[in-house]
Image (cartoon, rainbow, N blue to C red; front, side):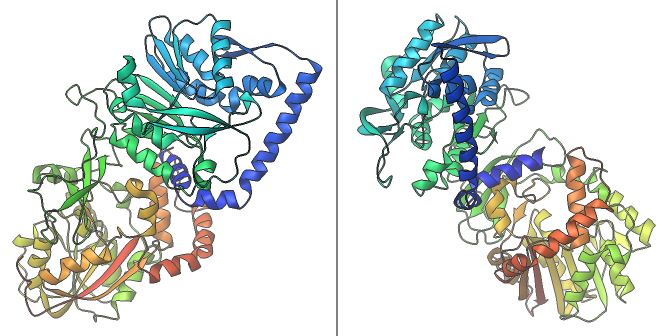
Length: 610
């Protein structure tokens, strides 16, 4: 499921992985591996053999074995059978496959059988014994469509030392780097070559499929193959990422850089199959004019200089995310997000046109899960907001802009407020009027007929991130507030730890629904020119219990699960929120929570023009 894949990906790319390794989880797994190795040694002693047969689906291959270590590696395919099966599912007859780090040739043999005589396999293995064993296994299986080279790929030409284990079957050979400490094994001098130059110099065909197992050199190998990876026919990469080696070298963030580099080379889908294997593929040509619908082949550092930040007007925008799609339903169009280098706002670029947005909000499926009558006890988020507002403004007239189904206004009316709402989605406005008897208008703000200074409070709860021109919008609201009136904004926090962890998978990065993502700095840069003085910016790590339940239930429903907001889901959320409260409280104090609560007061001026 999408949420499980996202959680798994972020676990593998964050420091949590390093902490788990230091906690001893990896050592426990190594103990299991040691016990399995003992079993294979015993089996080999009882029934020694010089050949071993391995079958994957309809393909069978024979391999030379001369030790219990080789027997174990061949029979288990180095513990990578399911990943080899996944790779073979993607390989077509006639493909050119690159096997970088062939070791004994386990993958090489099966790849050669899969591509057939019409295709070929190009292999690279610098370790001398593994190179010779790979050649023996190719001869044993009578394969003549493989070219094997005894050099190592990288992003520079160099002569280095390769640390090799006692057995060719150990699979732990790696290039010695500064900071690796004492080398546990022998040293073999090897030659590093730049992949793109080597391919061009030897006239090798460009790969359709590429498999890497290079023991901590993944980033260097991929960067040396940048031009090759950007070729349209290079459609798939299976890369084993050796976290332990990278962490030992202090490069714990290298897996994230590897993923971002593959995205920049046009691989629109990057999946972590487990904690050590990454599968990247380019989207197939479809309805995008014959070209891949993936992210562009090069991730630009700068965007169109004519485009400007919607808050501060600065034109220096730096691309951050590419190829974003609407999460709630499949749409053909993809979007990008850029960060303003001055105020740090994240905004969709280029901006959707007004007709596209109008059609989007007219869709009756938009937030249909919110069209349910709720009692005050089920509206803890709305109640929490009203309690916080009590410290800044007394009961009077409130205008809730983007009031949705009217849950907030219904709670406010029960507390003595005179309520008014504006909602551009017709089905939501009709629900609020019919279910709660609220006064909800559907006109644009500039067409409202309220007199100047009519409202004591104006609220935009989860709205400011939807607006194409947020500053112009706030300036239109400014005259409707009485002098000293309060403006309240609730929006998502682009500076939150959750965004830092999830990056483009952050749930509220969701164009064209959300057009910008604010931080405390950028929200304050928006308010002052709009005619508002910031009173306070608060943050929460998560939303109260009922909203958390509603959000989780909606997420599960979108992934095909039939769930109820009562019962087991509510019972599970409650203890989780209580247990995590101390950590969430600390994050709130640093304004690192997932949402921002912004309180502002109308200033004397109507906002300066930029």
